[in-house]
Image (cartoon, rainbow, N blue to C red; front, side, top):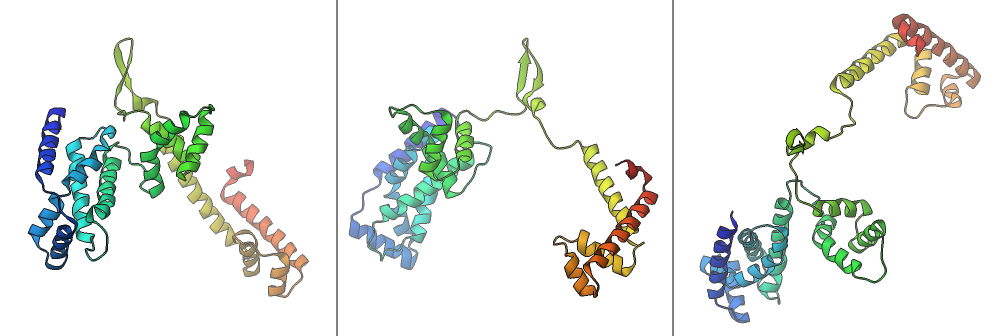
Length: 289
């Protein structure tokens, strides 16, 4: 949407809002009851149209995020309709008070979805960080005692209730617009590369990753074959002592098998020697490792 069309749409919405009549408290209550109990569409229309001024007022507070005001107002109307569907007219509360929360929440969600192509956190803490970081930073920076960047992050994190890392990441996001990874980088007036060409990836190369998987599978096969050389008692000891997350002690195995812990140690030593010989026959190259 161009700036001109946005202004035209916004002007039309503001004009419509100004024409909508104000509702007295009792009239508002009657309309809300009719909608709540009878699903009267005319009552809903009068109830919501009379609160368009509220939607526009709240939407205007979010204009600094670079999104069209007309879109913000439309999202506020979504929140207004949601409030209408959920409002209990039998409680002693004005509809505007109840609707304000839903209107603001709907607009905030829209801003978070569209402010950047990079999706941020949607938890209550992340939302509070996004919408309050600049305001709190400006407030703290106006104080007399100077602070380093890290000290400022710590104070902001404590004020909002998030981690220092979250504050640093959000501050970086708010510090500049989105930049395409395909944006060309010029050198001596010529575009010779793109931003994505300078991204660093610490993951192994595909051929190295595949080689690691193959090596792991081969070693597993060697171990399975070598274990077949053990008798039942030796196999049990090796599995319980070496291949279990909570390895059994010599005393535990000795008690289970009815022998001394020294005998268990001897059997284990013999079993490991067998495994070593079998593995050297299966894969002589591992001898150097």
